[in-house]
Length: 273
Image (cartoon, rainbow, N blue to C red):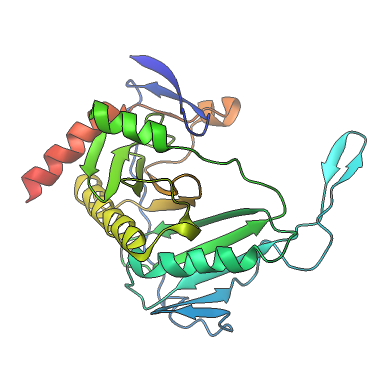
């Protein structure tokens, strides 16, 4: 079966083809020694057990003029922005780091040149949990997944967990078993979310990572923090490199339909318990 699916939240289109099921799993080892355990960069901020530090080298810098320059119809601008790392002890859970990410976004907004905010970390078994925080001079598309979240709750086919935090398989997954976690109720963006909401989402992320670990044998997983109404964390297992189809068309391609993925993950977790 082949389907083109367009995500109702992001507008991305993916190609699902269940002939493309046999793909080698990616293997990635935690670096040794851990670079973040020996990192001695200056601390920008502290909150609870977490601290923020500049990334070295940064992808974006605070110096420069972010205004666009048009040349022959093409636009360029200096790479003005912020690139920081939020972390705590080696095995700190995401629930302990989310409040400081929210605080850093709030503080970075004081620089009126900065308009778009995001964060990402790669989960590798045994690796330090470190979120990279970005602020850019251009707006990121506003995400409004609340209506879709409530429709998914009613449908139930892709739901992994329903409670204070809501966990489900993405309707149009860019990667096999792409999983979204967001607050179960309300429209809070990250910076307006209370500590109970951040804790519930962080705990749900930990549960989703455990589910993926049990079912998929510890793949690396990219976690992407997307602000919106409400905010969400997208978990993308990295099971294989891009295919030629993806490179040529820009369409993510794999054979794992989310409805089948939800059933598979539920069964594997039940059999492992």
